[in-house]
Image (cartoon, rainbow, N blue to C red; front, top):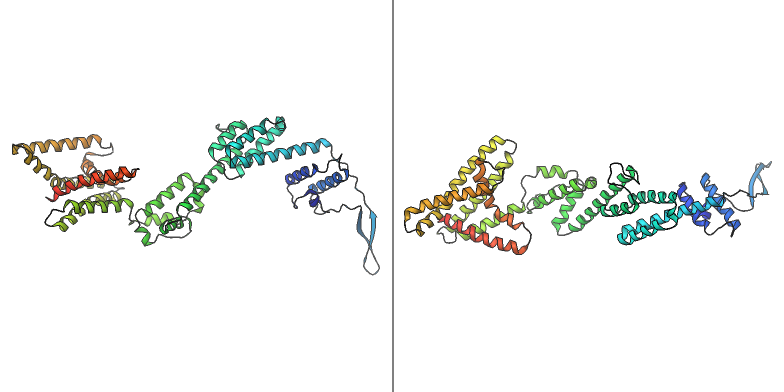
Length: 439
């Protein structure tokens, strides 16, 4: 019978596993109850510690002696008895208690990661038990608890805070107490790994369907995958990929090795991609231009002209900012020129207001004065609520762009009912502006 069969484990060089196996078998082979079994267990334990691979516990051991004249070995049989003095019983009891401490650690950590409340209750019972009143075993329990939590996936910050408070670990200090800095670093690394793995699993489940969502996840995870032309035509596709990549970089850096290494270059070179904002504004202003010019004699021409003017202002201004963002002086000149152009376009739109004021007043001569007062009021209110980063030369252009992109800003806010009401109100308001401009 081999030593590993006696110990009940596979061959190993791990002394901790050998000691735990010995302690488990010791429960069934007590010296006072089974002296022979205890002797075999003790000899197997000592042999395993010395690194021996096999052992025969029979009373007679056959071994080779001198070769015969024919060149064959002559086997002699002689009795061999083992009379190895066992270690003191106190050593066996201490080893058994150490094994119990290790078992309690494994049981507690497993339950903590499965059910936090039940695990904390079990931890409290273990700490108040008789076994852990011994300072040596309590310190052993604390150290093994830290390493076990650092090795098992599923640890999260709130659980670590609760366990640290119950175990009296001072983990908020520069030099922690109760555990070593290396253990604390391993715990935080496990928290980061667990958070990253859970985020990756949720991302995989979120991107299962439809097809373009699966393509987005493959673009993130499959090494060497590139952005196809049809992906650029899906509104918000590249923006979503950029957002996920930024989220992983900032919050889950442990996942960076799993990210497509070519993705950064692909997103940098992708200059023409349809975003959600672009698609929404194009549809919104095209529909709005068609509604605003419905009474015009040249409906199609006026609709196309109105939509092209608005969209040209929006995307042309953003294109100027994108191309001149590293040249502040040229950008300032371009913004001033855009402001003058938009003032000229706004004069055409607000001429409808001017005509309305003249029509409503008994004295037509008072119309220009009222219109000028309205214009000053609008400019003053715009200046008062504008951000501090705006300058006098881009006040008009930034205000007009903010007014034209306001529907998209409202459509992004949460709440479907609010979105619908906001879109209806803006459709009515902006359609009246286009009607006056066309008139």
